[in-house]
Length: 397
Length: 171
Image 1 (cartoon, each protein chain N blue to C red):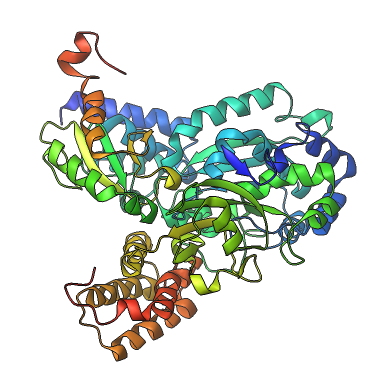
Image 2 (image 1 turned 60 degrees about the vertical axis):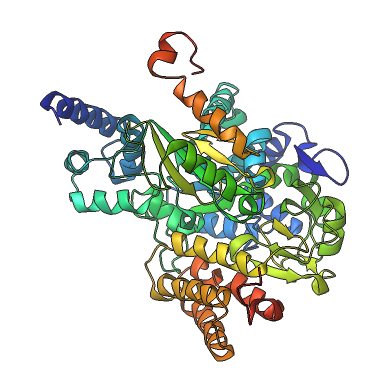
């Protein structure tokens, strides 16, 4: 199901459990060193260096530690984790087991979003098989003293639970409201214990890095600051939507050529919380240092009404804001009202400027990533398509 | 609610609480099971769950009202969730939505009078490359066209009542 530019998915081309075997052989410190050399960064989109997270959790004091796989893939336009969990679940579980060994955890959880409930049974069967193969349980792969098991925890339909502290709140039986950070989950996570929360794709890459070495990952492709390959979920107005494996640092134009969306007037990178990139910026690259992305690319064809796009995203945020902090709870409602005024052609330039200032305030003052990124789409659409959104009459689409 | 129904609910919840260790972290799994088994989480169920976990019922209420898959009011046997997010919108979700409303005779957020179908919006089902997408309970349908709506609903209807008894059910 994954289309790659070179053939089969790169990180599947390793012997099963070879990464885990090597990790157990080289020991904790070297696993972290290998990850450091690889330069692997969080594939959920935030791009935090994986080795730093694992190192902090490994050195945190505590007997009980946890590994959590964030499979709450709620970002509009993102579906790579669904494909990974359907087609390559063992890679994810192997990566989690390596994580458990590295930080000294006995227990791992996959936080699976409620919308993916149909994946639960196949995943549980796969876990049972791994237990039988001694890849989970006591003395994993014959490594004395290393016990690790994985459980599936179901979400119940809340986008904000993709935020790591909200996810932990949810697992503990509370409303999925983000916590203040610091403290970070690496020292105060699930049940107050050191916890690593990583994206599905991040875990899936780890066995490959262990097997082939960090140098292979950082030198094969990608950019200096964003090494390696990445999965992209491409949807919208293009001939060939789907999941693609591309090197980090690919230009938008090149990606569009691959997926058959050359005539696009804009693309939304990073889902509802990401940025709208207009055609004049298609030379820019998809990398943490340029346009950061969790892999969601939504293509907008020449006939699309960008105001409707902004409206759809804001409706999404009004619905999904947890309501805990004011900038996000009220701000998104005001922005949506603004879009409706623009739609009816009764928004003055000065009011539009005020809305943009409100957007800036939301970026600064919201408590978590959801609120901070919720005005992005609106602001970038207004910036690049001012001409299209202003002065509408009932005749304009 | 009949006394016997209450007793069944109570014993079900007690069993679930026992399975999940009577800890706060077991709250969401318990609620998910009650939702699945009873189609909603009643005030009575919230009270029993609160008693089992030794927390205030308001705590349970606050969690139930936070998550969109947990409901206080009874939902239909089949919960239909149509994705309304951008990729599905661009793929033509509005026409599918209209046809669902027409064929079921209800609006979004409502349940049919016979208690069989509930119609709801969903925020991204992760099927953006195959939109418009909808879910019927846990089953996903992709690239849905307005003319397929009738077949999807018939597929559900054939799992109960006279159809099922004739052995024509699809379940």
